[in-house]
Image (cartoon, rainbow, N blue to C red; front, top):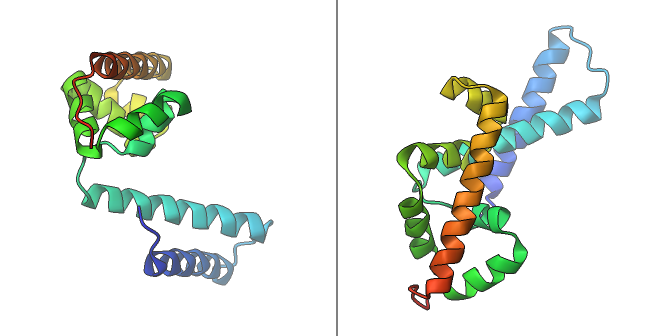
Length: 152
């Protein structure tokens, strides 16, 4: 996501508006600096998620970096273009796995929240995410070893 001054200003304005409303309502803010920081962070995450939903729902290369680790990613970045990598991930994952991937790595939802959505225990959700991560890594490594990618 590109940095946008307007989005930044909106987040700052919303943060101070929340603080003002709390103070005006008679609420005491014990640690104003921490409160402002946390509130601003939440608004930034919210805005980021809104922008992500507006954009194409393809997989972000940053999530792939997180999943594979730096060593493998350096090889991948040099050899694959973004669209090809996104399509490969979609081919590896089932519809349910793709949704789980989106919840955890795109929307950055907490495991407890995902578990609640899927009506499973947090432990089961964590296990599914671990298996999903292993499946993605194995699938992409196999894909890279075959060499059936195009040099961008």
